[in-house]
Amino acid sequence: MGRPDLVKALLPESQMPTQWYNIVPDLPEPPPPHLDPGTREPLTVDDMAPIFARELCEQEFSTQRYIDIPEAVREVYRIWRPSPLVRARRLEQAIGTSARLYYKYEGTSPIGSHKANSSVPQAYYNAAEGVGRLTTETGAGQWGSALAFACEVFGMECEVWQVRASFEGKPYRRMLMQTFGATVHSSPSELTQAGRAVLANDPDTTGSLGMAVSEAVEAAATSGGVAKYALGSVLNHVVLHQSVIGEEVLRQLPMFGEEQADVVYGCAGGGSNLAGLSFPLLREKLAGRTDTRFVAVEPAACPSLTEGTYDYDHGDVAGLTPLLKMYTLGKDFVPDPIHAGGLRYHGMAPLLSHTVHTGLVEAMAVGQNEAFEAGIEFARAEGLLPAPESCHAIAAALADARTRTSEADGAAIVIGLSGHGQLDLPAYDAFLSGGLRDT
Image 1 (cartoon, helix red, strand yellow):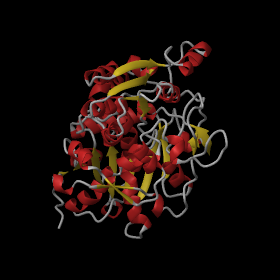
Image 2 (cartoon, rainbow, N blue to C red):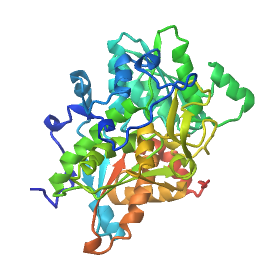
Image 3 (cartoon, one colour):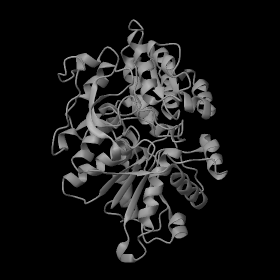
Image 4 (cartoon, rainbow, N blue to C red):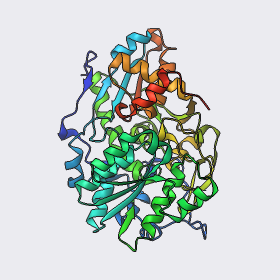
């Protein structure tokens, strides 16, 4: 029997998931395959193995419903997992809603976001293969920090290309990466052919995740086998690792007396955060056990789901990556340098794109000022400063909750709070001083 008066649902470590959930075998329609850009034939494990750990390649194409989480990974997960599911009672009172608002808080990880859920297994599998260095890109700096932490845990070097807009606007993220031992470059840089080509065309570019991906992939591909590449979102194996979020939510909602989540809101940039929260709950809906709605909330400045096309595209500017069937604004799209740096990506995870395309997940866009206004409202009620990315999900959830004022309208609304905003205070300062603009 659940406790309606509960504020925090805290699972014991013994109830932490021991398997990742792969939604592919449960989808009504199989997702389109990744394609080789040269032959346009479906990609294989062997095609991806030169730059990714082989076990990660196996996971990328797996149709197995559950995949065991290695004990060495679970040992590191125990530092912050299980993460809390919190009922936002003070926020409910502040806005006068009959809805029951919950947030799944991933900011308890060592680097303050959900990204460590994938960085730890990625570093583990690479270290097990004897890889000495991982290269990657980062937008807001959350993924770069997570991989730097994971590489330190497993005794590897980490090299990060951070999007210039974030490198200059979020110096504390760079400092955190360096504290964990990573080497950090502003992207685009003069260190790669891809970076030099971009700078030759536009020396003043603010950069993009697509550009940074090109640089990190090139650095790994030209390392002579010394380095491999790690991606923080988009790909199937990353979505797989993030499923621990939703699996825990399914154990935590009954602790409040809830039979299901009525609506789930999550921010979406590359897609791993929302998919990790939603896919285990979507499994329950597909099995006929629940009737939950899922809403992906993206920034109006980079609206791949709501204004992009569903087509095959590269994941990077230079075209070094495979062709992925996804909602995309085009690989050459350079988004406005909004403060939610983790959402500035031209495309969306193929699996999440597939669920949107088939009507299983809805999508909407939120402006930057609306997002920060909601984030501040959340902080003043709950005492927790959300990451700018998560503010988008909060804004959408609050707009929904405000329409629910009677007991008959009451609903259990779950918000994915992917991380804290303590290192994003300059962004909040810009909003408070009226310096933010919407695009």
